[in-house]
Image (cartoon, rainbow, N blue to C red; front, side):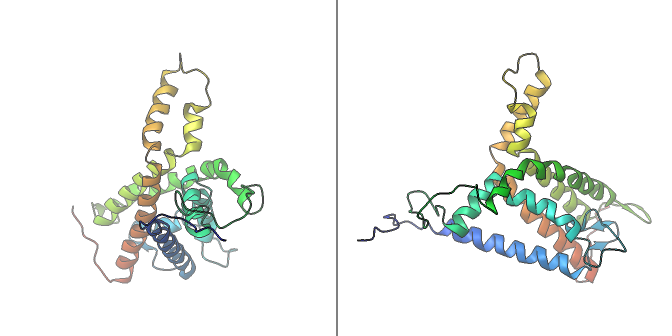
Length: 236
């Protein structure tokens, strides 16, 4: 006689369902944005999907594809995202006290899941991308006719701040900041850095979600301005 998947009577399936919907929606939107290769800039504003913008004559496709594999790899191999999409897409397990669909456990020793071990290297690669996003956020205040504070610039600043929190709340950075040390005595800078990282690491999942949403919103705002659907609100 087959055992039931779970005896839980609450709506345990809501969280994995929402995760599937949000991740699929973001994935489809990101692929569409990268594919169409237009309307990604407005004045000094540059979509985070196209930062840094690489205009290379030898590359026949959208330049976004030259960049997106880095943040995509960083998020796909992220410990928090792995927990989320393992539960949502593979039901491995879908929730606490809910049975798994698989009959054997192979861990992350087989392809493609073994690639998750590259997470720390994707973290290293994400740093230059984050630096360019900070440059774009600062540049967004400087128009051809001078310095201005527009809503788009503020959106880009908020976006890069959230991305920075997501990047530096990463477990890989926490290990480098001080987790690799056996003793913190005599290392006040490393200890302070490790304590700060540990505090934001506790909300790593929160930074993962809000930074993902902010990237999409920043792109959508710039795209709407570039197509003339809305006018950029200039505050100064």
